[in-house]
Length: 476
Ligand SMILES: [Zn+2]
Image (cartoon, rainbow, N blue to C red; front, side, top):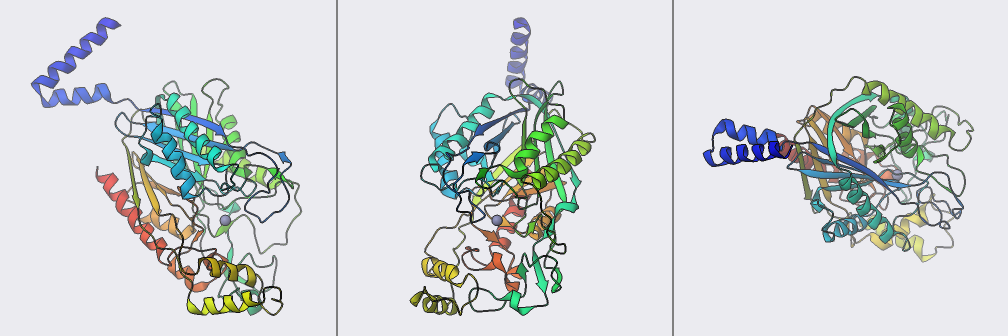
């Protein structure tokens, strides 16, 4: 064995000094080892604070299932990057930066901090990531997940594929034939409404598409043992957790179930399943045409997780694994501008805030949005602006720090230079909703000042930047 290594070393030396073209190829083939490592790190918060996302005030009293930062690190011998997906409703850019600082400061974590993507699933039964007693712990545990995944790096093979699952997706913005449903908190009337009353006669049609594709990438050991599977689906969340309970929602249930379906064995390092959020800012799991059905806590989440996992496991049988593919990573700050309130909004808000205890004559949520306008109307705040693109062979992955609309994700898939592509939303920041300029003209909750906080054409700027970066990585 030792003798063999010495011979390879001299062979490489000879090629190096003679500089022959055929020799250069031989050097590369010696070096080209594709490696992958995956790990989870527990990010369950202390009990007591309400869960974030659904406006609950009930203090958490139990953990239905633990929350995790789930990390996958890939390395082609030249480029190394990490995709970290956290069970959280949203993680601010400053916490993501803090996690990268921990990574940069620790020499044992050998990865370029800009090659680390940190996203949130958007579970609505997790904590507020910004809570004082949680944010540093979260950043630290994200860094730990990357370190652990790097420690688990082993030679591996990789493949990817997709399957469509349209049945769980509904565009939640609707045209309706009832102007009473269209009043906005700024004294105006919108053209569409989010989540109109279920089974209502006034329902006309949804205001946008859904993206039914479940994309996934799968990593196995060279012997064919499952190492990790990362999936991407454009569904806001499912919901239906028990009151006061912490849960990773269907994202966590999928992560566990897919391991079982792929036949992952217990042992070390353990298999890591991951479900990241696609472009679901306007897509949820609620069919507004039907009256609501009473479901037991976690019943619907389990049902969705099971359906998606079964679909992925079936499609997984068809994919082709490669023992080496080229990797690429690019990231860019776009210096996006915070949105400012217009004069009309400012005046309306000032009028409400003059007598905040008497808002009976104003539309629903008028006081809440007046407070947003007062606090943020001058645009004196920070919005996340880091976008990333990762290349895995002929698969392109984009990362956007907003709750991105389905049509933006579909456009990236269509115009991407890669054979397959998908987008991870709420990555490297949580800047609120990202409607397209056309959707801004329709109004509705996601476009309201405060819910939307970034310049109105941000989705176009982001899409162009991502497509440009994809083209550069493809050409490399
Ligand atoms: Zn949301």
